[in-house]
Image (cartoon, rainbow, N blue to C red):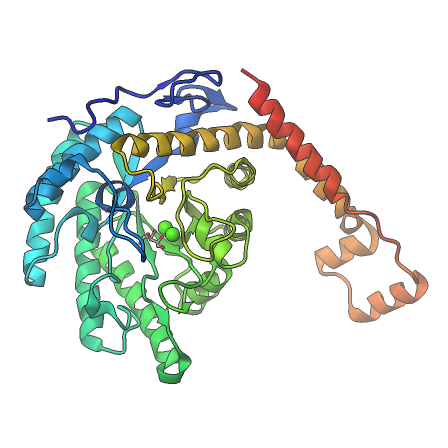
Length: 442
Ligand code: XLS
Ligand code: CA
Ligand code: CA
């Protein structure tokens, strides 16, 4: 059975193509440097936004027209979603996908029934994966939507909820292991607080640390070698999420002795919610050896919430790809489109068009970033700017061979330091030049 009859396999048609169902810049087999675009970009589909999402918002009900909605029985619908998903992956030519437990199978009357429902769908997915080149980039569990998680999961005040959440994570690790997930994600969900007035901050953080250790131990026990990822977010749904941003998350991991077991999954929209740029979060993770994977989306500059839009901002994709290339790629990670079509883009074909837009935007970002790095365009600016640390007193500071006493003597002798311009406008103009020439090249 086909769910996307009107769509044929999406092909690369070049930058002049007028066909909305074609790639203009993403050419999977094309090499950028030593590797192909496909090898470097490792795109993934987010199951929840593409197959489970109905496009409702706080002011209006769902608008999405989805061919699998003709099935009313929740298990029939869940099976149809798997069939539709694999048709979508193949037609789009996308190598990865990601899901939460709750996206793929309906909740049962008991936890046991919920697990049984999942098993049926996981069996089906396992069959599809056998005959397909598609792989599972990561899975995770939804420990935030159901009312039982009203006070959080691993940071709930209720130990019974903690146990329930742990049971779901144990199952999630087993499912990931069966399906060969390359990573396993922990996004904070409701791990945070609404108000400190009724919160035992220390106990909640300690319990979260314990929870992660339990997961690390169990993955080891079952031989699940996925990379564990923390996905920072500063707020929403709670007023303060514990994994606020990468710097918070890294401090947390180090405090609880977990930094060897985790890396970060950086989401663009979460970065901007935290008051950072996307590239800030990527850079912070990268310089600490903690960049694992990316949730590729974008927020809206006028809306202060997590709008999860498909990426189309070429400055953002370029600067993100600079970080990713400097990281030597994402290893086991990928670029997961944790993005949903707008509520007004409700037709099934919009799902393809949105992914095409995102894939083309990152292809442009990759090509531009590659040239910027090859030419040392930004590196030269930076090394020139910090040249004072390469010799003399600067070199001594960097090597740790000076003292406050010596620095004071130096400053007294070399009074009135002279600074040089940072030339930021010139650098931005150079960035524009790189972008435009990428778009010009056929
Ligand atoms: C929500 C998060 C979530 C995670 C997976 O804001 O982005 O979707 O990526 O739980
Ligand atoms: Ca995300
Ligand atoms: Ca998000």
